[in-house]
Image (cartoon, rainbow, N blue to C red; front, side, top):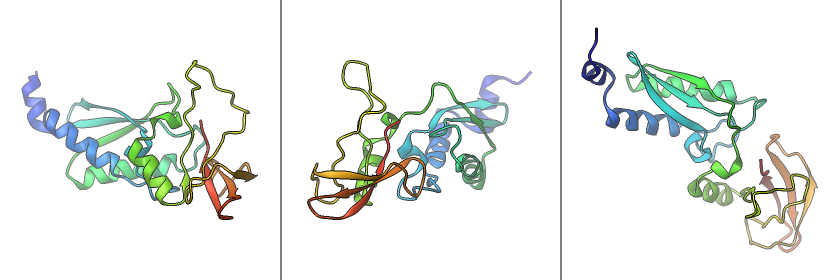
Amino acid sequence: MVAARDIDRDIGGDDMLADIRRIAESVPDPELVVVNVGDLGIIRDLRRDGHAVEIDVTPTYSACPATLAIELAIETAVAAQGHEARVRRVLAPAWTTDWITPAGRAKLKQAGIAPPSPRGDGNGGHDYFARPQVACPRCDSLDTTELSAFGATACKAQYRCLSCHEPFDYFKCL
């Protein structure tokens, strides 16, 4: 029988799990390379599993074409630092754009992508079909119009600012 302290010595204690989390969260999103998976908030949990670490990841949506690439990149990044890791896909609760960190929102805006509006209205409800008021990431004007509900990726819509006349992407609220 292996004592708990022996397992801690094999894969490290809480500090080691924190280091592995930092490694996993630093993996860039392959479709939105200006943010990493930590910025998106998709790393849900880490736990010891024998000599390995199991990392729970919730994709931004279940049909996201980048999901497998992200999972492999996380396992590869962690393995490159000498740790064995397995990624477990967790679909519930579903990911929400509310999980994007403030740093992630700032990175999106700096790259010219309008970050998503908060989902809730303060009363626990959200009208999914309502058109959000989207601020231009370049000049902050709210005088914008949607050009297309879909952009280069399914998670973005195309907008144009009527003040500065620049086109931009909006990371849709989920």
